[in-house]
Amino acid sequence: MDDERLASDSNVGDGGPSTTTTIAGMACAPFHKAHRWVTNLAGAVGWQLIGFIGSSHFGLKGALLGLVGHADLPYAQSILKLSATQNQRYGIVACFPWSIKPVIGMISDIVPIWGYNKRYYMFGASLLGAAAVAYLAGATLRDDNDSAMAYVAALVLINLQVSVVDLLTEGKYTEKMSTTPEVSSDIVSFVWLTLGAGGLFATLVSFFVLPTKNYRLIFYCAAPFALQAVFTSWFGLLPEEKKAETEKVNRALLHKHKPLFVLGTFMAVVSAVLAAAQLLSEDMFFELYFTAGCALALSIAMFACMPARLAKATLFLFLTNTTSVSFGSAMQYWFTVDETCNPGGPHFDYLFFTVYTAVVAQVFGGFGIYLFNAYFSTFRMRHALMISALVSSFASVGDLAMVLRWNVWWGIPDKAFYLVGDTILEPIVEMMAFMPGTILISKMCPKNMEATTFAILASFSNLGSSLSQAFGVFAMQYAGIKTDVTEGECDFSNLPTLIVVCGMLLPLLAVPLVFILIPDIAMNDPVREDNEPVTVMTGLEKETDEGERMGLLGGGTKAD
Image 1 (cartoon, one colour):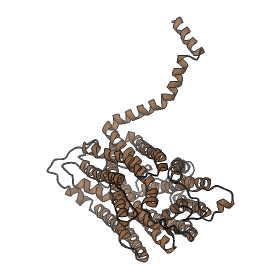
Image 2: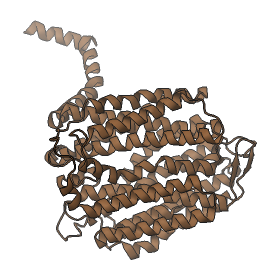
Image 3: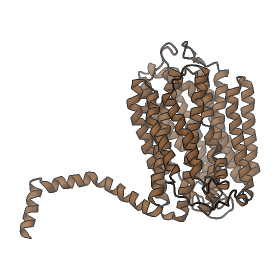
Image 4: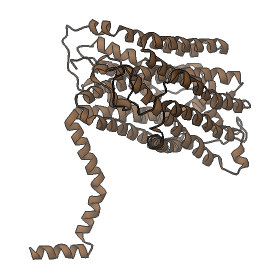
């Protein structure tokens, strides 16, 4: 024994194997802890579900959407030669599948395919999405209308794949959260970690591909991620019990939740016609009136199908989203077009504008959550939402300063000023707006309808963004913004006016709306529509079995 001790002491004193082992152990400790954490989580919910979350959130929602998103602006400007207005129009159309998630979820619950509520819906959507990615990887697109339509159609199918798989995966892990509540926070953390890892992987790939200017190569890199979901869904990696073949249509579920089905269907119809209007009409005043009509119809539908207090809260979030008119494409083009189109502009390259800024934005998005939890979580609801509106308005000052070139007069380089302004402030502002809204809805939810409510709200949020962009198309046309990248004929002279009106003044409409639509409560008050006490949580931790069975999150029926 003494000899062993002496040998051990000698090794330590000499900095020998034991020191090396200690350093190696310290370096590997985080990986061992992560492995134990994932293993324990898999023991609670099953390796199949863990694997499928990786397939859907790392592979599809993180990597696939990240790669496609990084390719979007270079493709629009360099290959399709789209104007900023066209690019924003097509973006509305491409994102349309995300606004029809509630009706897809209810259809999958009501009408099983070959005994399964999820498997073959995901397989069909994944087959279409993988084919769309393969087409974009292999096709030679040009700057003509047929190529633009083909590109938009492919983006619609890719978004359909991701939204359907995301929806039905949410339903399954929400079900697990209700049956094993002790691991709910772990499931949420794993979902967000896999999503973030997928996004970082897409950023890394784009870092090497974008400088080559071979933008089709990005779709080659994205193809395996789209294709893997075809196999994981076909072979049933997502755990799901097969129903009896006699159960063709669940009419009882349809009858029980008919108002919700009607609301989801109406939202899907509005989303479809809004997307169609972007392709079929060029009359900007018709589009203005049509978009306003869609917003009014959706606002009325809220009060027809929701409890009053929940409808008011939903209307507030919907209106603040809609009236924050988006002219993002005009700003993207101003930042990235060449000297011919924007003399004296910043002329950011795609690598900086889409890759470097994405990494910084992810970091400071997390910082926004920290700021909210540390300093604003005990505020009164009205105060938090007003501060959010004021900060959002103030954040646009950075864009105004760059467009007017104040930063050049101050001697601040464009990239440094953009990183501090848009890249750092914008994700913080977004989180500062998102967190109070999530808590507000959690307080207004009727009992046992949390999942249904959050699913409806997600679609209202997506529709609000689409309407905001549609209003933005009108604003860009009315302001005379021109971005003809083919001929180099551009006009950004009224862009400062757009920033002041749409970016700084319209977000302030939230301030008077707060006093009309938001109850005067603190964010930590246990208030609910049914006046029953509730422990306030945010996001997916709140989703319960009954709400999940209502189908709007793509959850199965009790048999699942």
